[in-house]
Length: 428
View 1 (cartoon, rainbow, N blue to C red):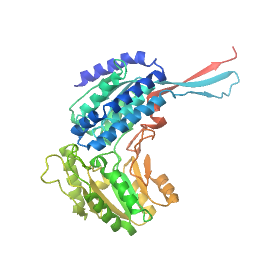
View 2: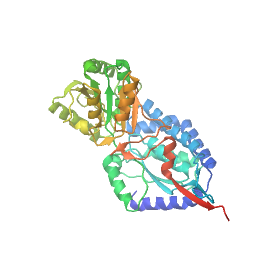
View 3: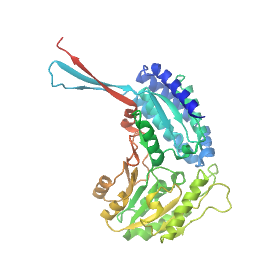
View 4: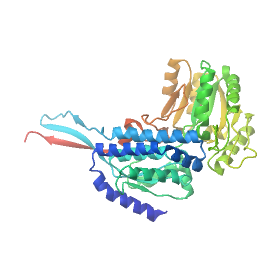
């Protein structure tokens, strides 16, 4: 599909919007809940499609379907809560009130690493608000997105409310990156289109000396190795305080050795393949660059031998430093780089020394420290003593070059609504 097909999809969505915008929040909520139920009914099939397209394990694929449906359930509730307000006027003869209306056609672009959840998070909010939608899945994972469109139509959304434009354009593979986000923002600026951008990250994962080692290791496994390290909030820079640095490194290496690597459809596999060859090349480039600057590989460090596919050994590198590529770029692979710090201030400075600010993680038993560091980190989300940041009720998004706007939470639906005010003269 190309530009002509995209234009036709927008036209169809615009025509459908004229009717769909008049539906009630309760009507839209019923359709979203039905879509949610259909996902749960077909979860095994949806997970298998996702694993075959993306490579993630079946367990993770089912987890993504559940995560995706949680957005539909959440926004079904939000569809009935798009409240306005009454504003006290300075004029005794005037009343001011506001109400909210859907913006129009919403273009929803999804990356390949979470092709189902990143669609439902956007589309669920847009449809709940009363917008119609045009979806663009990544070129690597179109079938997962198309399956959702089939289920959404079966749930009762009218013709034209949902349109999917697929492409093999390589740009689709970078959807979600800061680079592509800037291109999209530039294109939208000409017509002042409203945008919500969730872009790249370079998440710091800070382990303080007062942390429980087991808690830190398990949180790191989740934050770094989920989806084989291919998440936008993956812990890219693991910062460990000097007093427990070696102890943490040894414990993490021992735990990772226990994890099975293999095809996503095989039983017991925890770490699957990367999605494409470029990811393997980038990971090896980061590993070799780290070694050049004095990094010490204590686990892995090479592609998997004797396997067919885009596999890389789970890798741990000690003695990381600011000069290395992984300090400035997302690795998007199961490559753990360990940085050493001495003071809280040093950790904060190192964490904030980058252009992006999506997520961050703090492992500490000191509640006062968790507050101080969370407030000081230049990120949109902070996980404390855990490695997960994703939940439908959480306003997901970042600061700096990680984008603007939020997906999920009460804030998510607001991205697709316009506030209209009405001033009434009550003296007549």
